[in-house]
Amino acid sequence: MLEILRLLKAILPRRGGAAPIVPERSVAGRTLLLMITIMSFLSAVTLGGVVLVQKSAIAWSADVGREVTIQIRPVEGEVMESNLRTAVALAEATPGVASARPLTVEESQKLIEPWLGAGLDLSAIEIPRLVVVQLGDPVDADIAKLTRDLTAVKGASLDTHAAWRQQLNTMAGAIVLSGLMVLGLIGVATVLAIIFATRGAMASNREIVDVLHYIGASNKFIAGEFQGRFLSIGLQGGLLGALAATLFFFIVGTGAGNMLSSEASAQVGVLFGRFALGIDGIIGIAAVIPVIAALTAITSRLTVRRFLAQTS
Amino acid sequence: MIEFSDVGLRYGNGPEILRDLSFSIEPGSFHFLTGPSGAGKTSLLRLLLLSLKPSRGRVTMFGEDVTHLDQDRLLQMRRHIGIVFQEFRLLDHLTTFENVALPLRVLGQPEAEYRPNVTELLEWVGLGERMNALPSLLSGGEKQRAAIARAVIARPKVLLADEPTGNVDPDLSSRLVHLFAELNRTLGMTIILATHELPLLDQFSYPRMLLSKGELVIHA
Image 1 (cartoon, rainbow over the protein chains, first blue to last red):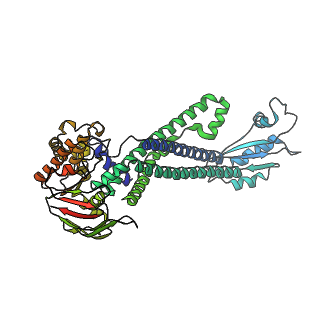
Image 2: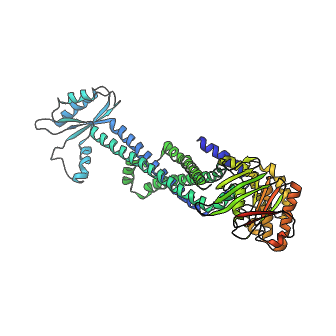
Image 3: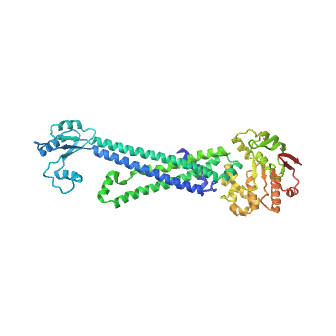
């Protein structure tokens, strides 16, 4: 950050006065600007995607963690409705449980509709019934006691969704890790591209470097002129890429809402939280701008200093 | 001010381009450096500009042995030396004013401080009306006068000129050398002007450093 402030201080006073010694418009400069814009866009989209997945995973995990399900299978000689009432009573008597509600027969049939199809008369067969238990505080809820108590109800079992949550967390962690690795690779690719672009710019501006050397300019002065130019390109590229990424998330979020059916849209919403980045996502994308600018300035500075050391 | 003692120069493992050069240049003097093409004039000027180090011998400038100076000190020393090239070497994207002001920008002077000096010098070399023009719009003579102005704006102690009249017609060549003579007389600047145009030399009575096959003879 200090590096950027120092560079800004070095280049800003000149803007109102004399022209920059390194030409502002050149093929190498335009190519580098385009490349940095693309890299910034990819970084910002990856970062936004990681934030979305992480936020959704946390939200899913929190939602699922606040709920456990008691399943009561039909057992010959047992009265289902009686078992349901007992299970509800046992659940409500458990510390940390906020409420317990048995699903109606219609709700239970609706749950198995995706597998058996709609319109079937299931009244002739007995199907397992569920009691949805909402936890007031997932940490303090005495799940062990509830499990013990439910042994009194024949055919009852408790599903805490722990395995599913574990899988969900593992999957979300893998996606976040993959996203961070992609970000790292984009960073490496950006650094390499900046090195090549800087060397290209130095070679195409060799005449300027020679003249500056002949009139007594130090390598530090020359490097400052070039890195000021590259910092400016980095800031512009970072800003354009971040804006494009923000626009991308806006268009995808709006497009998903308009193009998908309401049911599909709802499912996507459940998965990705309606593509809303939130303040942390916006901050993450905004952070891409100074990071890319600093990466450009520092990489080009080192490349220029090395180039000058080799040639002078 | 400048003293060469048994200086030799070779590039890599090649033959010696310059051999046994021993001479001294007094402050405020004017010398022509002449000789046929390939005699080593540019190499000698590069030694004087400190952009080359001699293969052997000793070079003293401004009372300091420059043979083994580090890069930073060399740059400081180079600020006392102005250089004018045959091909002008103005920066195409900068105006005449900005080109001439370049050495002062390198020294860190603010524009408000150097603007009057640059403007005055440009008027003195006859470019007062052309100070906002880009080099591509200047004639050969104007470009060379701008290059001379750039070389002297920081008041160097020594001014080197490598074939400064090579790209202009004979009449303009003579006027340019008069301009160098004027700088020598009015500012007391030490000048070494390399040229192979003998008719031009005959118009002036300055001493000649004749370089031939890598060896130097000075004709007073």
